[in-house]
Amino acid sequence: MLRLYFIRHGECAGNRNDIFRGRHDFPLNENGIRQAEALRDELALIRFKRIYTSPLLRSSQTAEIVAADRHSVEVCEGLNNITLAEWENTAKSVIQKRHPDLWSLWIGEPEKLHFPGMETLEQVRNRALAALLDIVEIEKSGVVGIVSHRAVLKPLFAAMLDIPAPYFWKLHVDNASYSIAEHTPERGFTFTLINQNKHLDEFVREDLG
Image (cartoon, rainbow, N blue to C red; front, side, top):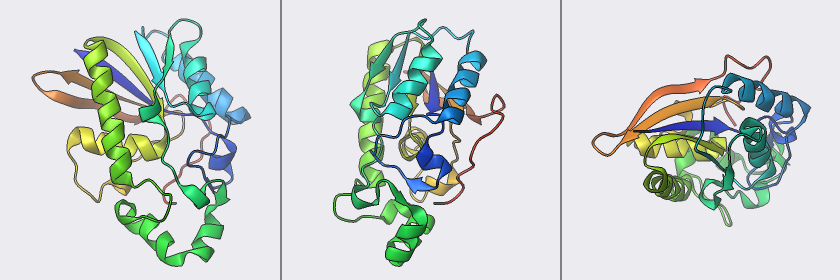
């Protein structure tokens, strides 16, 4: 059996200031570093074979802190965040005023959202699942960490559970939370925990937007 710990990166300025992030390379802020350290302590007894991470700083920094020089960390491009083109590093309030129709889709049915240069959630879902299946094939058994982003983990979880659209707002993962799934060839994926955040003293809850 392969046990997978899915980790959302710690807090960055984009989370704190309600900014669309996409692939803008925000590093962890001070609270994000504390969150990652709390997560490291929470998972201190877990022996990861390897931790895979998105290449973006907020994710890779979280992975390195959790690894704590005890586990190897490997960058996986398939875990990179969604591409949001002109929305990246832009306040959500600005997008709401500038593109009210698109904003309405984002808060209602983001699976239908598309504009020039944007990667759709369906595209994210497909490439993240492909990356995960590659990891499953490589690792096969033991415990593996996967550090990524909200807009990757939620479509990925939906793919693993075969949840059709609309699914995005039916799943929730906080910064520096972790979720656990198991994989066997016979049964595929089984989730045993989603959005564990009891180790966190402070986090921004992003319910919508």
